[in-house]
Length: 271
Ligand code: PEP
Image 1: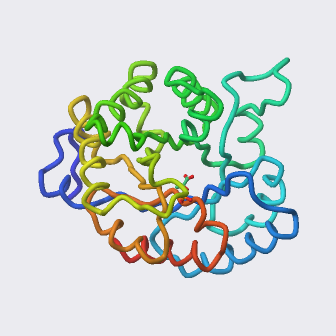
Image 2: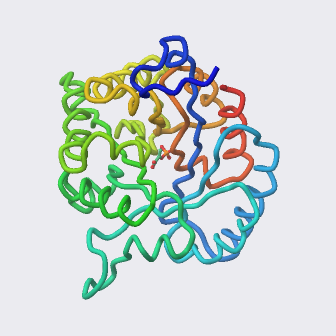
Image 3: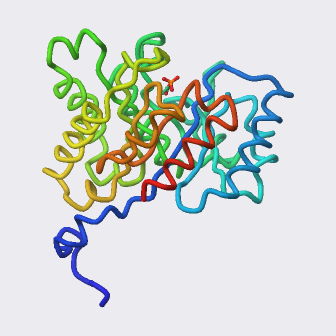
């Protein structure tokens, strides 16, 4: 039977089944050289052939995007950027526009990563604008949200994540989230080797989905919420087994093809 009614009136049994395709995206940060990137891309491309269900993406530094596009052409692996300008063109020395990323075949762009928020002063308004320009250019923004250790210890994780989410929802409307992906990245887990427990991560993922569902149940049900923060081959399966964890944004472990592919395989097996 094909259900033809409005999405928010889907029968309950359909909305309870996990229908979201997992996404594993590598955030290479400011790492790599021409020869190292060529090797990494070749390894990811070769291994991704055996990933049947999960979506795989890599986000190299800007300068490697042309060679990434060339190397991954004809494969199922997608690519994206780690940042973009708030502006669309013109006298903005050193900036890269959304349209340029699109031109180089990017599917994704990361916005609001905690390193950009803390090291480069990107506040919620800037992140929301980046989400908007990415979307307007036809890119899928990966919106990062997450609390610092201090904020977790003060029990304000939900308030922080809600504020970061709401900045985008208030600017673009809740339906805009359907054009992107959310990554919950507790700042204290990024690059530290200290991963959130599956229970801690699930709690925040469920909070994010519920907050969006309050505004639009169909958007919430379809939205992919990735976990990021020291995810690796050893802990991925447990995290990905949680019902609201739909993949991972991977930093350190995305720099070696076998490690990254092991996470992709765990995502594949999580369906
Ligand atoms: C990240 O920077 O997005 C990240 C998750 O890094 P790591 O996996 O190294 O913690």
